[in-house]
Image (tube, rainbow, N blue to C red; front, side):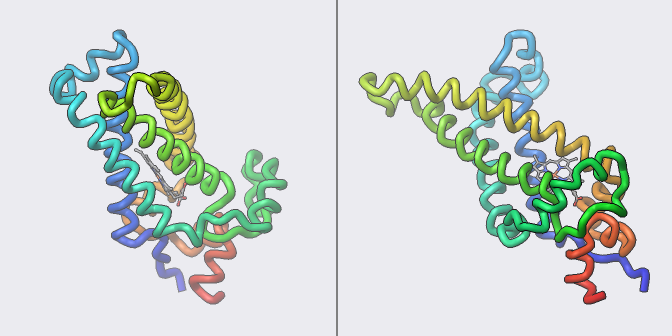
Length: 206
Ligand code: HEM
């Protein structure tokens, strides 16, 4: 009756934590390259040449995990009319009145926007990063592309940083029980019913 419910399979958790580790690494080394005031981070992470070597590779790993998530979670990440209804009742969410919120499926609209934001910003980071990785392949007549790549790389990185801060804050401090689920995979039936009632009904048939 009170058996835990599987929220994230082992494969989903491994996928998530590869994404998290890769993101933290590219974030830390990227910040080191961004400002001389943060250059000490590169020193801590094995020196500038090591950081410069691994930054683009871990960026590729991060982008790959985003496509992996897309494949695994596409069905759960589509925005539905139920999400819009939930989004319109946001004031109840902010006031912690979860019982007044309309039921939603596996993810709420905030989680879905977070995912799509990360995916699109990640694609821009990957493409602009490729230009910065192999500048010698860009002919001088296309130098505007190099300048655009610098601007796009920094601005999309800033978007991911903003999304990341909100995600970690929501996942660890606001929604209690969420963090355990991405570590151990399971949630209690009460948690599932409170936060994701349609998903709870779908997986339990209750
Ligand atoms: C140290 C960093 C991170 C922490 C502590 C963290 C925490 C969490 C938690 C607690 C959940 C489960 C939320 C729930 O089911 O209610 C989750 C899910 C998820 N995480 Fe992370 N995460 C981190 C990094 C990342 C990164 C870098 C990405 C990049 C794409 C990411 C993408 C996702 C996605 C798409 C989900 C499923 C939907 C959602 O809950 O937003 N996470 N994460």
